[in-house]
Amino acid sequence: RQDIEQKLMSKGSSQYKVVCSTNALGMGIDKPDVRFVIHYHIPASPIHYYQEMGRAGRDRKVAWCILLYDPADITIQEHFIRNARPEGKQYDMLLALLQKNPQGLRESSIMLTTGFSQKAIRTILADLEEQRFIEHNLKSRIYTAVSRLGQMDFSAY
Image: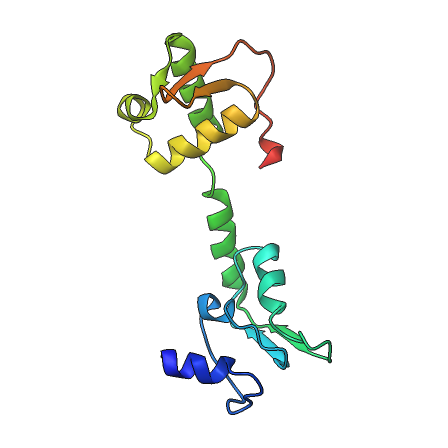
């Protein structure tokens, strides 16, 4: 595999007319003479699509990006989008927990009390901190609720 990658990436190499790859390898391709990028499935987001199609035409000559997909692919991506963030009630539950514990809590205590996954807890804590509903003491690693009026702005995510 490394040999093929080296040959593909070597300057002036046009030995390969077609390369099929995952997006992980594709994102590593920095060849100016790529004429086509063909997606067989819908990328994870418009940003991913933009980055991936940017592999083509780096020499500023005409290049094409083609997206092939099955309508069922849209359903799969919608599922990932819906499940990318915890539910609003989880935010409410975690914030209520911190409000009931004015001394604050560590992430591990929050995880044991709520039963939420570490990923969900970290996402919620980061979002609550960003919107100034909580504070995080980096030294003690304690999260505390802040007296604040208002609702969580989920449109930011």
